[in-house]
Length: 166
Image (cartoon, rainbow, N blue to C red; front, side):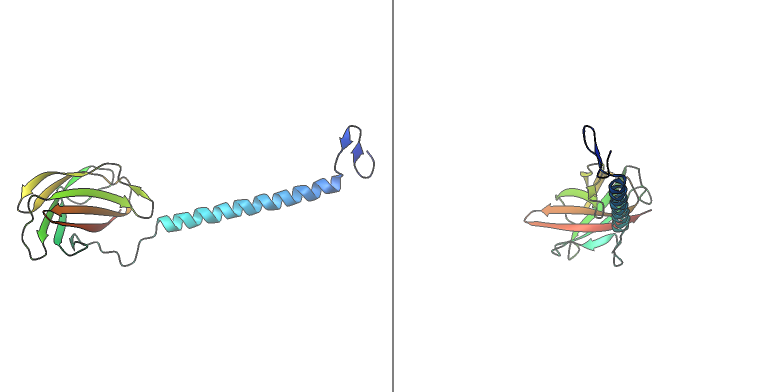
């Protein structure tokens, strides 16, 4: 091999060129690793964020003010990784029990972008504005929301409950 790196069978970079290339590749790889670590830390911080003004009340007025809705777990505090049932009470804004409503149930973890691992639903109208919601399961701690869309006659409205589970 001569000074410019020509060897039999082709051109090979000189040792100095190889060292420069390896140094640059190492710097680039280090920068990529640092960027990935920063991204991962940012995602962890974003996914664990909980708004400071989170309303954890169990009684709420629906979005358009048509209904006052409350929930109560049927068996004590809400536990993670257990299927449980709630009693959902629905009344008009002026306090009359809402009967014969169709209620859709949905829930998710806003910061994680995923929903519940189950498909809870209203299974029984208990009377007096009370409805049995079954199949509720939260598979991890954190901030969850439960949404109920209530359709009673000519009035459809939604209500959202925030939950913070440990």
